[in-house]
Image (cartoon, rainbow, N blue to C red; front, side):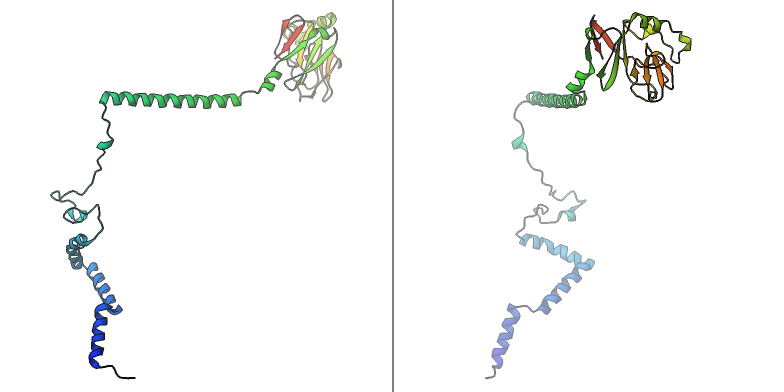
Length: 265
Ligand code: FES
């Protein structure tokens, strides 16, 4: 291999140095910049050089004023130009008179208020309707009984709101017997006339007042009802006479809209 002439080698080295800066020279330049930035003196030098850099930059910063100074550098100096940019909204401003605008605003506010009130009312109404009893429950709230089908001296039991109801067509003797009872001997004193609307019709909830069993009709020591669970005896007016039951049989709400028709509930 032929040796390279000395003049050619020197020309190649010069070309390489100008075209491709060496990594060592880059490192040294970075180190010099960081050293300059870290020292107060160097920071002042960088600030002084910044306008030139901004002027030569293609980036248009909203914080750069016409003089190219950074706003932070002008803080507290009212003489300097304020760089705050406020958009112009005049294109969107109404050209109508002020009274017209106010009427429109009142109309819109009123309309929105009405819509909101209507929505709130419907929501509350739906909620309340949802919470109220359904049609089948309301239908069971009242029970109508044809009294002509119940002969004298007989009991009928019907279901009302999930409970048995005793309907007794009493005889004359039973009515006299019920009215003749001395109240002083009763555990739950109550006149017979207070328990019936028509003396011949006795209507009671058929649930024992002790623990809720259903008493048996035409049984017990007093010719009325007997509860076999714990031995409570009720008379022909449904008053407790013997056993652990504390109260008389309950009388439900009922009425006679016609002579032969009974409505319970
Ligand atoms: S439930 Fe009727 S006597 Fe106890």
